Amino acid sequence: MRAAHEAVAYVGLGSNLDGPVDQVRRALEALARLPLTSVTARSSLYGSAPIGPQDQPDFVNAVAAVTTRLSPLALLDQLQALEQRHRRVRQRHWGPRTLDLDLLCYADLHLSTSRLTLPHPEMPHRRFVIEPLAEIAPSLTLAGASLTAWRKHLCDQTLHRLAP
Image (cartoon, rainbow, N blue to C red; front, side, top):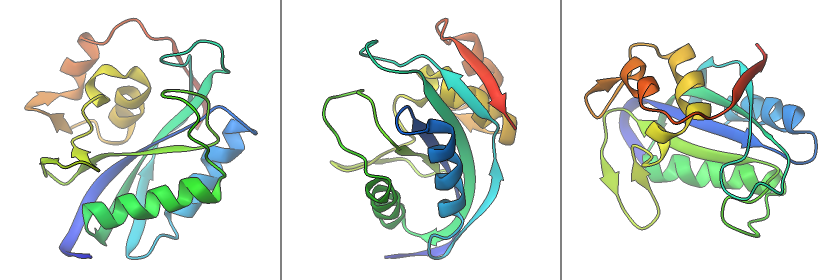
């Protein structure tokens, strides 16, 4: 399950349970220990209101850039294993969680399978992804548009920087 070459991928991180700031910081450290993968950049931490059910705490979010030799599905497997190590329980769609890791982009790959869609289909609609992504990859384009252009189309989602 190795990629033929190194690829740059972006991973979205989020948590709103059990010390979310610490959950995200520990997950960023754990990303650097994934096999055949290194973290090349990480955004500041951001606070955001939940999307979906509002009867839950606010989220802490970040984005990391990684260079990996893992295939997209092998990287997804590693991310899901990391979620499980953080005791993620999937009780309801968009519900609270100790750790949520989303593979946002993998090189310039477009993929649609039952397990993985790349780029992440909801990414352009989420300020808590676009803002941290723009912080670490300002020249990245999604579907032919700059992150600056995507920012203009975001709905009014509350987002505030928590820590570098």
